[in-house]
Length: 357
Image 1 (cartoon, one colour):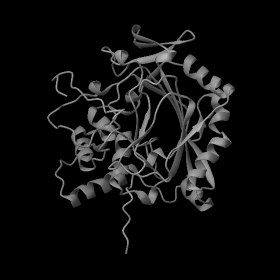
Image 2: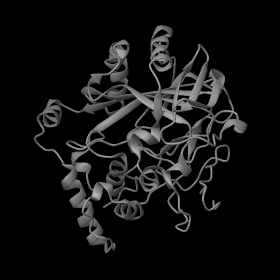
Image 3: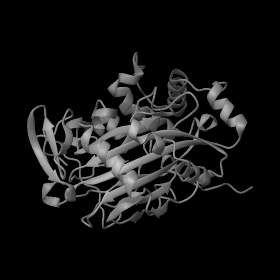
Image 4: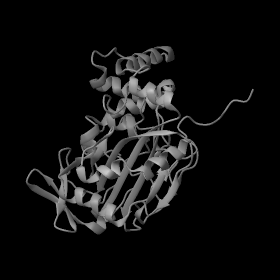
């Protein structure tokens, strides 16, 4: 009998580079929303309450345990919001794009699926920034558990554990980048699993990007923008960004302006995702909730697995908010890429308090 050596975090197909993803009119609609409907919050403010939660998703596998990090040590000026999510278009101007047949058909094609439901449709605005992301995969989904009812750190741990494949929902993404510069800013990905060699798509990008299966593939957005502008000393978790005039962006802490950038320094991402289903029975199982996982069940399965592995931990009374328990799960299911392209090394996380790196 032959045993497969395929890594569980391997995409159904390798990412495909695509161009001219949106028409000029569609691009104008998306940028109109992003420029005029802010302010927008940091990605970290959407998803994390602590450094341990961040590291559960995007941390290196062999991190020095003596280096104590706070979430503030890991912040980069990368901001996010949503055009729509889980079948609902949040922005009226983006309604037709959210239910775009062409994008849905592209994602169905990754899996040879018959049906599709729009998922998250998000955008990132990134000022010049370092990248402390050691490599991550997008938030996976299972019947009954997704980012609508579970924190991103738990989603990541669940995916790494391999315990929940029975409930897994197939997905895919169409990702478009607008970064008119060749100063870093590329996309690193590990199509054969995190233990093997990475590949990358290099900048510049303009209305170009990827048809991909990012929920099953480690990847990272590389550092971008002028290197001398990548640090913002006053950046904090509640900093926001908004458009200023026709070609600038301002980052603020409350009324205080802490940084300002021209369009040419910015990196924009539009990230369209959909859930896909092989047949009508698969669709009905999803819509009728006849075979759903629950968050409580998932936590119980993880705890049972820790016990089976002989992992020592203190039983948490509130497992979703217990920092020590999050750290235990992060270590138990640690998984991250081993190597990075020479052209796009991992930036070093530094503790502002200790000065260690």
